[in-house]
Length: 336
Image 1 (tube, rainbow, N blue to C red):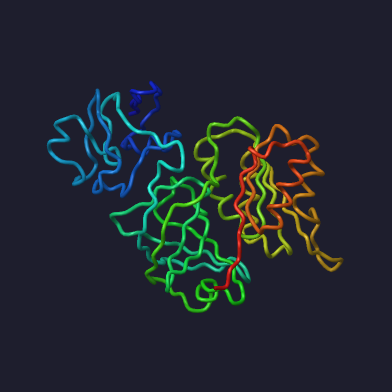
Image 2 (cartoon, helix red, strand yellow):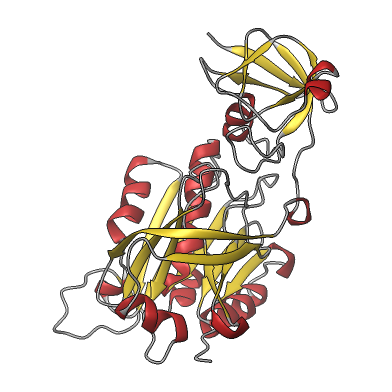
């Protein structure tokens, strides 16, 4: 049975499905409530129950008896038994999310192609990382060094964190990840970080541009938009050198095949007559300029190598797009 949840301050309402917690239904319907562990222990999701009845799906320890008597509840475990009215803080900007240092364990290392692996990281059972789709984390290495990697999973799918790691010769972490890192290894990270995330309050059609493993945050953003039911047109361009560098090409094609509002165009920069590639060639930003005459009504998300990101910024502004609608994340490579 579905019940209606109403946020008192905004008077906005959303449904909670059968046996669905208030937090789960809020996140599913585009309302970013704060949370931490999602198992009733930390208290980060605490809010006030103004009207209606709830029960907890599991035992909770993150709320005191006095707080419960005062009408507060842990939304991560609270299942409505009637229509409810709640008082809750909504997160609408990066500064509302706490940056934390947390341990994690490598649960899976998957080779995606000749030079990209996918890491799955599991946090302790008492912890979850709240983040915005497209943000990144810093892996904390020895001697105070850090390496930044974008989160490739969407916020609603936070059981594990997903990173895409490209191998760079001499790369401090990538050499280790490809040759020494084992499943069950314990790592530490800091995050979430960055301002590269989906602007959910916009109604502009979207162009997404990835270069190489810049696909990672784009993947998280697209999956988040699909989860929200965002029907804005998304045209995703993925630039790579060779076809094998499109390491999750079938996933991107599936988005386009299954959703009418998503278009996908892979673009290869290094092909020759011996290749069987029948698709677009050249630089990815030029392919977009060839396809779209007037960019002024779009918003653009671009992530990848600095030359690609700078080319997008410069050429798209020349084509009429205001720089305020270009959101970018430039992948800088460092060996030390």
